[in-house]
Image (cartoon, rainbow, N blue to C red; front, side):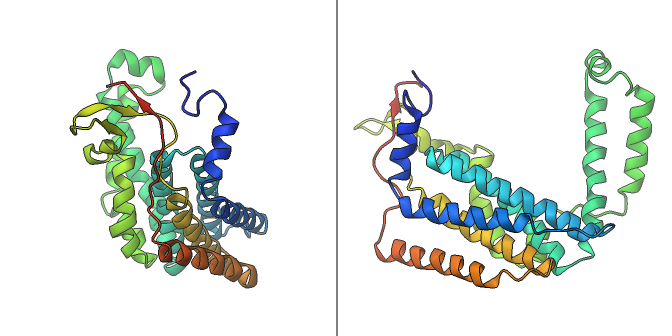
Length: 277
């Protein structure tokens, strides 16, 4: 069987979790805390800011849960892309916490996306467009593009960098987010990590199966960012979760100090090598 996790997936998962069981235990506790907090988010009717905050927090928490699944399967590269999505939601959450007026700008910016979708529809083969969405006649598409061009004329497009600045997380955007984008966009440099070399330094195949990176290289930043999101949403909803949140933060900090003081190499030997090209 040539599945990513091999013949016995549960055994493989157990082996990956055994690399750093304390980090998985911490991530499980943070995930439980984050999930409990979500059930306390009661949005007053008509409050768009808190509704958006709750939805963004749900995305951050969902990404965190997905990342734990990827980490225990040794899917480091896929975990990087998921962490990027987690950061994007965190940027917007922090931005609307610090600058409430950005809520309307965030909603209006969706018109940029809709405009571009209709522009792409115009480029489709007419037969394909008629098959996919017969109600979108050329006249309807042209009218939609014209209306959206008009409505977006005075609306500045806001990207992740702008939200990161408003969230006071610009350093994360310039460093962590930029690095994570390499995995998300499959840039050439990032693809090199999956290449297997022979003794002469020539390409000998590629790696398939759980990657050798320590789980903490995914779980440490993810738990830190999850707690940042939890603190932000608890503040916005006026929820007192400080004692337990501080305990979890302290555990993350202490474990990171142990990681650094031990001079731990973030990569371990291991992983399967495929003879593919």
